[in-house]
Image 1 (cartoon, rainbow, N blue to C red):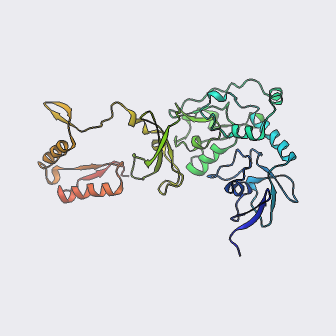
Image 2 (image 1 turned 45 degrees about the vertical axis):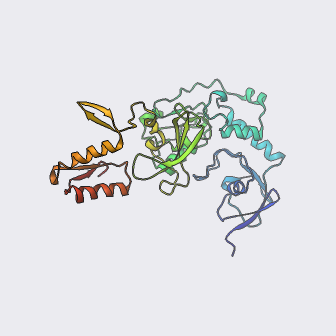
Image 3 (image 1 turned 90 degrees about the horizontal axis):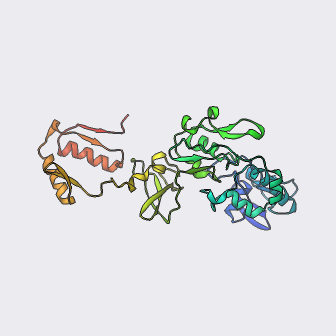
Length: 346
């Protein structure tokens, strides 16, 4: 029996693994189906209803929730589908802030992509538009902003918080036309159990969740997060000689594409003018710059004055396992003591 299922999408025969949704099978084969609420890292829920497709012998179907079947014949575009998608898109944008030029997600927004692909009738939108949006921006979190005027209720942030971080601090609150994303008691995000991991921020398809002072990098460098020994893979964005962003490497073997608050938002110290970039040694009561050879020689000379229980080491969580092993080996074998501790011990 074949490991893959064969189906036809827009006249092209493709193969997909059993259980794969029509949407993800199509996208994997460079066949675009408009979508908003689906994300490859999360379970599908079929909220936005713009990923409708025609399946031979059936009514229009939500492609993100429908698994592929052997011999299935799928059409991604016809007049009825286009009309239905346009109507569903209109319902999504009716209560959405359209000040795209001042949005951090401008030109990276999935809603903009849908609008370009599906098209909207501006006169219809103006006729149906609700009163002026006036939700205050939640700026209580020190690292990101929440603007519910730009939210399209896709639920990606809710699922990211539940499925990836396991925090479940946000959910849909209220009912009917008043439905929105909020925390317990609809309080500011800072008063919730949010750990500021940023998993919701990095996956938000619109400008409802954006980092504070977001700056587009000119280039990115793949590296390892410097904060602990887990070795999470990060892409550090730089611009003008400064670090401006940090994002997770999706296929990092140590972190699997996730980051904590430090790895995602805590690299600003690199740009600090107070950051030490050269060793300092004390001469005549003042700290002065020195070369590495001079500094290390001074440290070795000072350490030579101690032995046994006179000496102790405090290891760092910013070091990897190998560095911490060498540190404890130095303490026990060279300095002759078991006085070693670690800042991350339980």
